Image 1 (tube, rainbow, N blue to C red):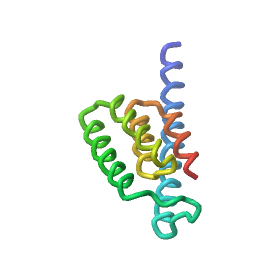
Image 2 (tube, rainbow, N blue to C red; image 1 turned 135 degrees about the horizontal axis):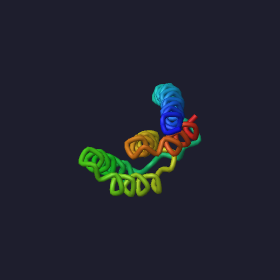
Image 3 (spheres, rainbow, N blue to C red; image 1 turned 45 degrees about the vertical axis):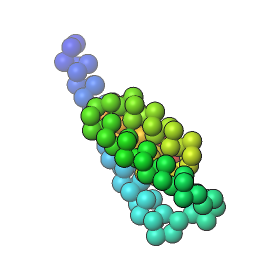
Image 4 (spheres, rainbow, N blue to C red; image 1 turned 90 degrees about the vertical axis):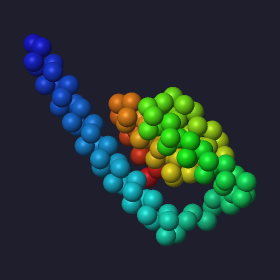
Length: 114
């Protein structure tokens, strides 16, 4: 009975990981497409807000490397309040969810970016 449950969990984990990999590939295609042709509907950000976002991204990455996922997630949310469609911040948030093994949340972010 125990082995059956372990096998089911392992299969479910593998299935979620496959979905995440597929979503990551799709997200990467979107990133590349948006780099080549940025969306015209997005309002341009002020230089002040761009600098804030750069600083937030640096702090997110530093906290993520140190394992402070709660702090990193809070910083991402702060950045997304400036620009909710910021690709790099959304990818950082999805990666934080993956590191926390919240694969469904990560998948939701990737799908939302499509």
